[in-house]
Length: 525
Ligand SMILES: [Zn+2]
Image (cartoon, rainbow, N blue to C red; front, side):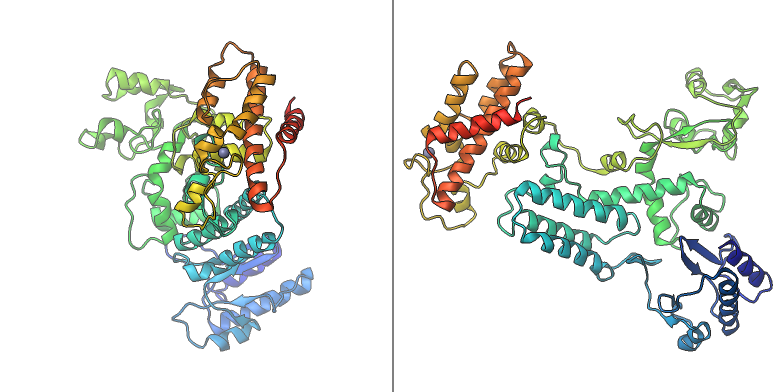
């Protein structure tokens, strides 16, 4: 492809092909990615003809030929005689926005209808699974895979409209709940496990994190894209204080709007200080001098200077400026490596030590998402050793979201008989099943009496959890076993209840106890 670049450079030099450029940004006549080629030029008849000649010459020498069926030419709206111009190149005219690898590329925000193929993708994926008779846990795992596929590609390529995101999240939620009652909200499912969710990612937050990633990539520099954006829009101004201008592209405005979050997540690694703005860049423990001293001070004296101005012979010399002793001390704490040239930005979001300066999408996501209180009971559910089905039934129980008959009635679902199918005397509710019901209670109490050397007086699931936690005199292995037995009892009570209601089958108490015993044996280390 280097040969192609040479041919293009010659054609541009001879002014036969005129690239699209402005006075300030670098001239870009074409971009090559893998075996894809994007040419950017003014669409004169002569230029189109010349490009056809370049392609032909390149084809003859390299054997790589333009696939005319897979290529398209796109014109801006003010261009006339589009068909005729396309004909000169022998390639069909395409409609904007350009789609690359299925993603619409546009200088404007992508519209909801342009992202319909993404919604269709999510719909097709879940439709393919709907018939498979998956469990709740299996459906969650599949939704996780849809989300990560979308997040990896689409959300990191373009600003997908919120309306599209809501549609996809709706498709996923509907699939998880089999089109029935959404017993747990989508937002709740998208919390990390320790905060009361199942650890799915919210696409809204992934979208935000992708925006931060884009801003980070710009700040890092080193690519044609960042050089082009920088020379076109920043024009020598400092990134952190540059005001948003109406003439900026939507993506550059988006980058600038993400600065406050990015500021919190990065640190300046000082080498010899020549590329760090003394006044505006955050280089003193994540703060800039402007922030520390305030705009009303004699900051004018430092404007336009880099940190190198207060380094002599490889050491800080803050005393040459009128900084307070305390600030001088803080400046001396900033590490410098004078032998190396470039100062760099490092990714260092608060609370994350992993990865040592490398960008991590997971920490970026964590930075933008909502945070909720961690609750001890969630540790009980998601800790090691429990089978997934038991984790999920305990999870719903802790949240109070198991669909017992009283709750079904509240949702307006017709229930022929509100009575508990285990004891057939009292009405069914979560509190009754776990474990006021004498049948359910005998299952848990028997477990506790036989294997845990005693039984607490509590007949409420959350209080039993507390009782287990309070048995601090017991060894870790006892607590672990108690946890397994309790979760297994919950699952088997719930399963027995469902079998009686939906399948008309029932298992005698001794059978249920036997099943619990086998499950506990499998899960025990
Ligand atoms: Zn009962």
